[in-house]
Amino acid sequence: MQLTLALCCEEARERPDGRFDLVGVFAELSAPGFPAVQAGMTAVFVMEWDADEFGTQAFRADLVAADGRKVITIEGETEVPRRPADRPAARTRLALPLEQVVFPQSGRYHFDIVAGGDLHRACSLFLSERPEH
Image (cartoon, rainbow, N blue to C red):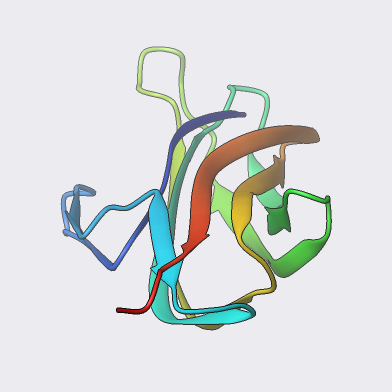
């Protein structure tokens, strides 16, 4: 499996033709203090599967703090169709709305994706403290 897209945004909508409309893509957030709560965000992941990876495939996405602590874990399964060699690879497109995400401290966070038996480091976020005026 290859992770071909990983990002965080305000909202993602998948069109019937498989395209995504992404709104408010971000890699940085600020908060007046910590722990901080992000009321809503969407994690987007697109996985492209190798020809020998088909059937039910488990996946896990962990949001990890700089100190290695897992903040949230998302687990699921996706059904990957068998694709002939003359067709594009099978893809899983995930837009995962997340609510009330708690960031315990300022600093760097990232998603780790486990799928197809491999660990992939995905998109990162940086959380900073916003000075109050």
